Length: 259
Length: 259
Image 1 (cartoon, chains in turn orange, green):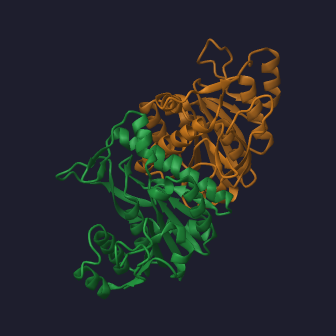
Image 2 (cartoon, chains in turn purple, red):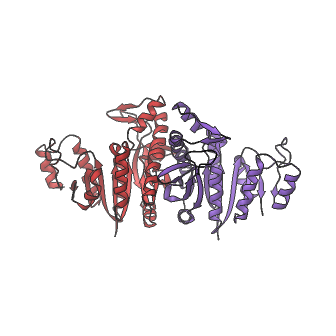
């Protein structure tokens, strides 16, 4: 069976040139098939500001109007994606940068208007695993930007969701590890102690951690999503720091979420 | 033997939403394998202006400093490329947008500094025909932005050159037609008469056209490049209007340049 790692890296790394370079070096050195899903970082907001386009948020979510869509398409699909690809190429990693629109690798619909109209935002509906496998088998490493498309327009799309859906889609034909790089070293036993990383969480211990309020707040949807991926066949979800990428995949760092 | 058409479309179409939509409809409807190489259009200059970045030109060539490189990477690789891909996807054409960096599909070097330092500008050194064939055979239509890479950075690259080099590279394994869409209906017998299109030019008639000054000025390097492509094995170069794309490929419009 194929094996593949889907790795999501977010804004805190993208925004920092030195951190990004170090992360890409570690990523390029990982053995085996891998896919990188990147977030956008603050540069989209910064470019938007310089262009005089105001970022509007509702409940912490960016509202993507037509002008903001152009900015994120430029910045995520062009600037950030191609910078990563060029750097990986230099590192000997044969990267190929895609948005969901390219080869229709990720299909999506424009988010239906409910209480809030999020604008040009995509909800993922599926992953073209055949294209991913064709390219992976041919030796290419996909670098996916947080953009999808529907009905002829691009759509701004959450990078965590793209990583999760990609991992779930691939799980039907491969053994998949899904890695979320974030600011902390993993899920913490004690929010005040950065070193108190919980090594492993399974469904049973998750319920206990929630009941005892050790896991709370923003960590709950993150872990709910992780278990959703596990339920869909992803073999392991790993949460930890980008700086420890190689160790995360070896199971020597971060929090490993298993069935 | 494989057959493929490499079609270059420039700024005059990219900049006009209605013209671009019409062109993409015609492009999507073309039978057989095809590749689209697009130019940048004025939007890069416009975005650069809005960002307060000055465009510098020497001899009509844009000097690509670091900030300008970021703008063209965003605009060509992100905004323009992904808009085209999303529209083609809607038209049922399974487009996949690439820069030269993606899968190292086009290798390049940073232009050596001579009398002029053009900055982050790429000179094409080769085309990864194996990747192009893999994707074409798998049913994907490549949409190539005028960007390459070298040594970990992106490079601004002339779209005409990318189209020509791609066509030449593919000519080793396929029967290739190279189409340049430009403002006029073809090479004209009389510059004042838009309808006086020369149907066919071969090496012999080209020499006569030059000797009689019917072909002059900017048309000469264009045609020299066309014959260079022919000499490298491209079966036919076609110059004509984007609005007549289907007829250009049938040989019913534009100027056909042959051996």
